[in-house]
Amino acid sequence: MKDSKNNTVTYPAQLKKFSGALVKAFDADVAVTQTWSDCADVGLTTWGSDNENKFLLANVPQLRGRLIDSGISADEIKSWKERLKTARGMVVDYAKSRNHSNPNQCWTRLLKYMKERSGLSHFKQLTKESTSTDKFLAALAQIAKHLDDAELRDDTREAAHELLGAAMVDGHLKDKK
Image (cartoon, rainbow, N blue to C red):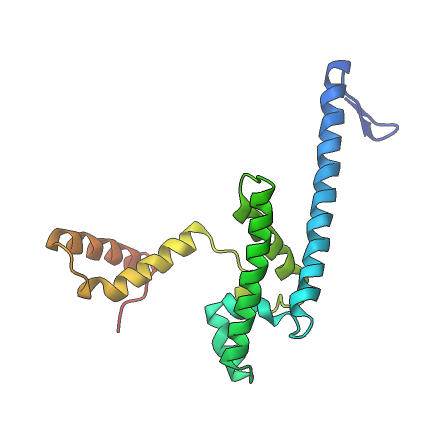
């Protein structure tokens, strides 16, 4: 029930307990988000202070060429990949030691916050979230590249060609030239 005088929402007595629990859950969620953000800031300071946080770009294949073209050596990019591997290992290992139900999710969450707070949002490939469709279409593109060279039964190869043909007709894949 909405009280128009105070612009507040009130609930019958039986829902007050649930309402209180809901408020606590939202408050805890806000606190957790802030904690992950703070952790991301420390991670950026630890691994990115000497490279303007560009170490986050090391695992983005589309950006490695741009990094090399800008004068960053392949060895430096390799060292950045090692930093990411170290950070990921620390997060996942700690989550496992705390019996977290999904340790990899902890790394994904921290990496997301680090990317958001890195100041590198102009690199769209860094912040773009891959959807299931994106991943599927990338797999289809790889299949298209290697299908004719793969050792497959004829009916399997034909079915794959039909799938690729449908994807091309729908505009999801470009025809090989």
